[in-house]
Image (cartoon, rainbow, N blue to C red; front, side, top):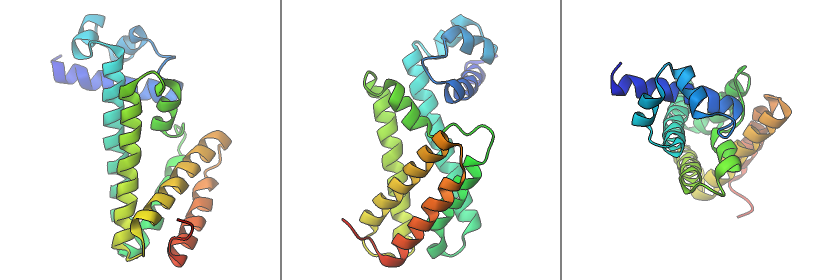
Length: 190
């Protein structure tokens, strides 16, 4: 097994275990076993657990945002429909058996106060999501896209957290309704 293959196997195991159970609950030996690599190979790929956690979050960010953008682009031909398609994607995600909330909110809650890398990854993810939503709103022709994009980002995070805690995918539908009202009426309440 070469370095790249080992790295992918380790990241795959980390993504499953960290997202399912939390970062602090998973030890490096458990990760090594789940990835099917030696401890020596694990530490060659990721010299410290912090390195692995940050790589996991960067990869999770890329995969999550790519999946969201692909769904929105594939399901909503009209630019005006794209902001609301975000909430349809969230509903599908929330309905999956492996949904455990936002990996970035979860990891920030666990380690944000003690890990600059985790805090930075969470902030970068949230900034990128807000920028994406702002671009969607701008493309839809809505007024004040920066304000409205920020409001939609709050709705997204609120829906994710509500669905994770309550186990109810309907949080996405409720957030979609609020987003539709905001899109119809501009961006009140700056």
